[in-house]
Amino acid sequence: VKNTVRALRQERGWTQQELGQRLGVSRQAVIAIENGRFDPSLPLALRLARIFAQPVEHIFLPEEST
Amino acid sequence: VNDDEPRLQALLVDFLEEAARSTRAMPPLAKAAYVLGLLGFVVFALVAPPAIPSGALAALRVASLALFIAAAVANARASDDLFRRVYLVACAIALPIATLALYAVTALGVPVTTPVLGFVVLLWFVCVIAFVAVRRP
Image 1 (tube, rainbow over the protein chains, first blue to last red):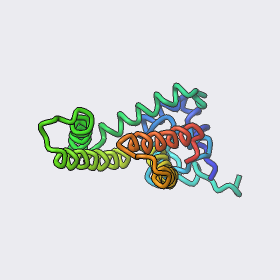
Image 2 (cartoon, helix red, strand yellow):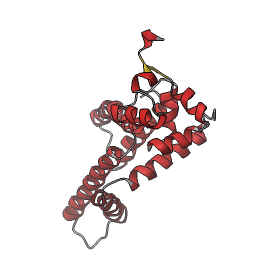
Image 3 (cartoon, chains in turn green, brown):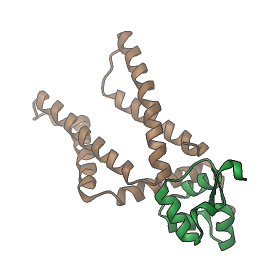
Image 4 (cartoon, rainbow over the protein chains, first blue to last red):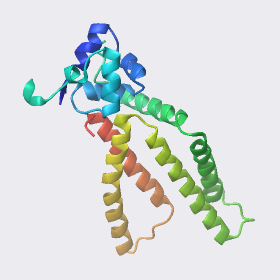
């Protein structure tokens, strides 16, 4: 699953540490999600959607749709 | 803002920060079990008070270790998504490797004593660091 987390974070001028604190996860988790190496759980994906004020399906995209 | 791909030192700092955060997030009972299990194991396994009979000492060591392991599981449950998955995958890899290694040394007649705990924990920790380093649990 691809995602737009890095772009959304950079738009807001947040560091990975700041986003991790807002989400309640480690900086490593943010890095892994941004690099597409780790698909977050549904609760974490929903927290990301709330923080970025975007629908989940706008943040996470199936590989074939990109 | 582009602060990804940290060096190993930053990786270890993040690991310790997450370990501290997950420990703070543990239920109070689990925190108490963590401290009691660790202290108990240190006292009964390393200090080994001579006044305690050997049978009772062995039982106390096992009980302390069981308490500590139960608390470690509670700690893993309080970790974030990435680290929880990393711990689980590290266990899944460390368990068969440790089983094979312990079976081999036993079959070869090598005496296996308490340092075996250090071996298993080290193996698990190496797996954790490796998976966090590649960030692909």
